[in-house]
Image (tube, rainbow, N blue to C red):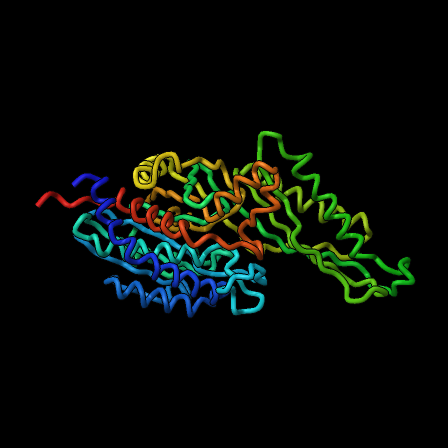
Length: 418
């Protein structure tokens, strides 16, 4: 049986489970759970994977789930989906919108889980067509950059073996039905920092008696905008965002301190070092300029490494996916400034493990085309983390299930003719 025949055979059952997967997606979307709180989601994942014939282990890295299917001698393929939600109030107006105020699947992790469960079902049903071992990983706490590391530190390799390849995907505001993969550094490293700047409080009518941390923080925010524009070469890439600035409680009270939360994205160690040093210099410099009597505190919130796609793995995997969905639906999106922690499963092993991680589209193709023609794509097409982010259920589910299934089969050994 050829690779193409194996792929077609495995996908024959997709029509029969589309409705079930759509219902699963709606249920997951309506019941989001924050990082390391994904108990309902984990239970549903474990129940379904177990019903497909997988050996299921729960509580890995606190709330993670691992589903293993042994099917003779062959390679071990790790398929991963994350399943935590975000502290976002949903504004989609969907009939299956989040039932939890202030919590939403605004990054599509519900779609990731749906597609991986669909792929695990198809691969289990088609086990006569392949040989090897599938390790399905349902990972918690991707949004806080802790979940993959927690699972690895929970003796992941000792318990489930070292994979021969790590595969995964992320839904994105690409046209539904499209797949995007970039070889090499594909997702940026992230450094998230909390900065506390200390002043001296006073009455709002007597600013001369204060060391105003609000002004200090505001000056810092503006000065930080020069890091990328004036300290990073034009051919390099970096992003510095102040996503939160909090200070004070009342209009006529100058507070004692202000807090900033800063997000930094880079692709190379050299640029990362330069940006982090510049941020620290500016924060401390503005505090000194303001006459602060106490040096600012800078602490790490979380950190993601660069996601480095193995070029050979991307070529091999995307060739198989392109054969299944059409080569014209595969594109290279270039490096993405978003970040991902799936790389821990490849880089933490005792040997080098190839990684292939790709994007799959969830946006209405007609709306994408119209927005691109009007030059309003960024305004009109909701992106990940938006309260309006809502992938089309179809053809998104079909594309995601097809991609994962064919990607896995591209690495699993085929059965010899009987």
